[in-house]
Amino acid sequence: MTPKDLVITPMGCRFLGRLIPCTIGRSGVTRDKREGDGATPVGIHRIVGASYRADRVAITCGAAPFPVKATRHGDIWSDDNADPAYNHGLHSPNHPWSHERMWRGDPLYDFVLMTDWNWPDAVPGKGSAIFIHRWRKPGHPTEGCVGFDPLTLQWIAGRLTARSRLIVLPH
Image 1 (cartoon, helix red, strand yellow):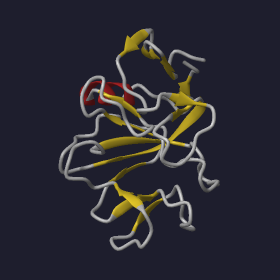
Image 2: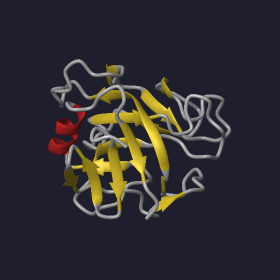
Image 3: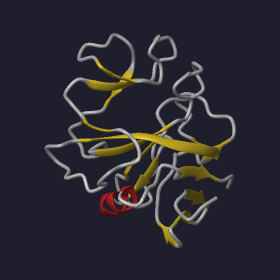
């Protein structure tokens, strides 16, 4: 572990010598992640990309060490085990499979860091889309992702390196 890793512990997230409040999945953490279980997977996850709502968020992560793209209407993330594009982001306004909309009415996905959980070679049913995104409110769990206060999330994003990882420890 390095100081630039996001280390999720029972007390919060350790990053750059600070302990930062965060939220995790409603079912806690798990070593056996399954689609829809509401758990955050234990392990070491690389941060592989980011997306943002340009109409709502001014990106402050400068020269990010990963691809950063603006979210568009019709951007989705497939969470359907039967979908050939399972656990991948797509631009598909009329996608016939179950998916999450990345362009949302609420601010939850205004800025999202993507991890390599079960990606790019997804195993159906092993769980999709472990993102780092803003929380709904302090202490309110996610569906398996990691959530932060939106200003803290921007602060973190501006300090990540190509070697920064999300490390979820067993609780």
